[in-house]
Length: 265
Ligand SMILES: C[S@@+](CC[C@H](N)C(=O)[O-])C[C@H]1O[C@@H](n2cnc3c(N)ncnc32)[C@H](O)[C@@H]1O
Image (tube, rainbow, N blue to C red; front, side, top):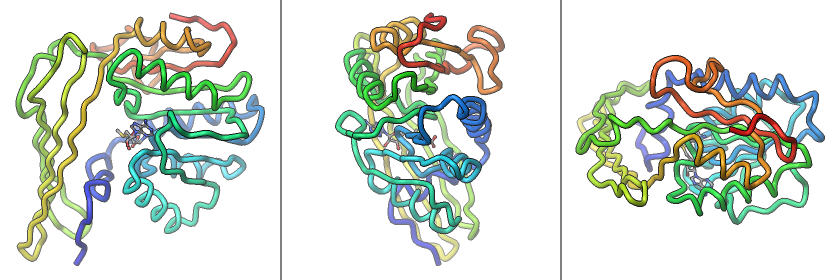
């Protein structure tokens, strides 16, 4: 009988159906790789490899580096890569702001709101500066944020509560609460609680508590520009609809090129 050791081992169960971002980022790699200066790609905040693994498998000619600050996430990623026989991934447990590499990367990506972990504009500036330094001369950087949804930003208490089942039939409850927001700092404290009910009646509980920031389009665009990361495309959804089209709030997806002057804003 499987026993979960930490919250990272549960992550993929919650996001099994989330595929549209994988298709989007894989499409970006496929579209631009002929323009890459070298074969090196880095994922910032790679987590369990939910997005990275299918992309690395689809592009065996590229070398993928997975960076995450949480060791348990990278452990899950490594185990999955080994099980799937994917060999073109190098893993690193590191804060991206501390991570250094002599060789630059042609493409960096940060799927599923990684930069939301920046708790201020200064934090965002630091992370974008770190990213810029890792990129080759005209490297590309693509990432998504949530588009701050004003109706959601005033909700307090339980914002999500749902049950999932793993392959062995165990039930996992995921409950997300937001009990504190700082509207001056533009931060919110997220509390995620997971309860596993095993088929033999045993129970396990895990939690993941963290604070995130939120950024509106123009703030993020200006910090990008400050760091010579020029916005080439700005999308509202993983189907590549331009920002502002489709239903509010949509996503906030930046596709940038280092140094080259693009659309910026
Ligand atoms: C929502 S998860 C996204 C994981 C993965 N990209 C995906 O799409 O499933 C955000 C990840 O960013 C990582 N992260 C946050 N701040 C980081 C930092 N400063 N350096 C490296 N990783 C970071 C977290 O540990 C977490 O695994």
